[in-house]
Length: 402
Ligand SMILES: Nc1ncnc2c1ncn2[C@@H]1O[C@H](COP(=O)(O)OP(=O)(O)OP(=O)(O)O)[C@@H](O)[C@H]1O
Ligand SMILES: [Mg+2]
Picture 1: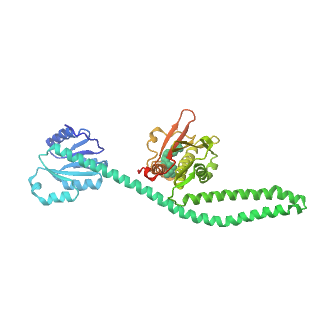
Picture 2: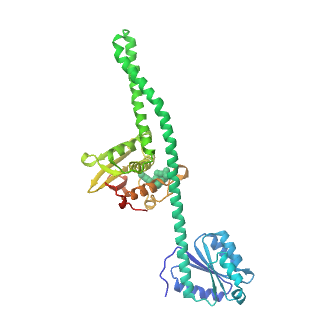
């Protein structure tokens, strides 16, 4: 009877006795039918298998004629971190030598089993160790992923501190530049009736005043941008009542430069034309939408200028707000659809993407008790849509820990 068990690992039995290998093959394929196995007699073959760097339980005879099981194990563990070894022996010399047994186990062997082998028992041991290995690597991958997300958050905090000081440095001169321009307009309006030279008046009216007005609207834009930066990087953990439209206009501010540069039309559509109030962490929701909009901008870069569009639509159904961010860029290839929310998945190359944008989106939205999904809409409009749903009231107890 086989043990019903699925695992990504495999087994490799190394023994110089052919009849033992045949027995091992028959018995282990009976008890562990789903697992691939290698039954080999030469240490070199074991090193080649180790070099594939796949989770493997090696079962190694201590005495292989000219080779010693311990030495082989040491070499295997230099080649890969994904191997575990069960030593076997029928040799009275090894069985009686307590020191050798102790040494094999203290150097990382996971068991020392005496021949003749009780195969059913051996199969259960292998199964347990393969599970442990799987679990260990899964945990390590999770720790690595969390660490990277934390580093990202930390970098964001550092950037935040830098941005705050830059914002401050820009704001101070901007204040007097703005005041000077306004003073100029005020003074001009008060005294223009006394300008008698028509040519001078024409220069003022046609060039200087419109120029000053343009400067003032440029200054307003910079002020808006600085405000957005300040709000975005001020790390607030507070839940507050927010209007979705004001959050979106902040996202627009933060992505304004690229939107303009690529000539993208950016439209917002709210069903019923009402404001959507939502209790949430404002900064986090802005970050979610900014990450998605930045991806949309990247996707549109490869398309024909003139028809590039990003649309954000908002809708509310019962106690949930649905935010759809769509762009009319190329569809996401089917093979990537299952990966795009995974940390480090990027198709932009190491230089241009970390692959953390959507992983962060997913993490934030889940912590808000919501979810995010992606759809290639190929029927009518050919868009890529990211649909976020979040409860209008953020209740910490609804938060899903990922
Ligand atoms: N709107 C979109 N259209 C097409 N592909 C997309 C879109 N959004 C995301 N993707 C795909 O998903 C991948 C992962 O996106 P994610 O935001 O996580 O990382 P990134 O944009 O590559 O890098 P980062 O955001 O860290 O700079 C992208 O590399 C891209 O292949
Ligand atoms: Mg991205």
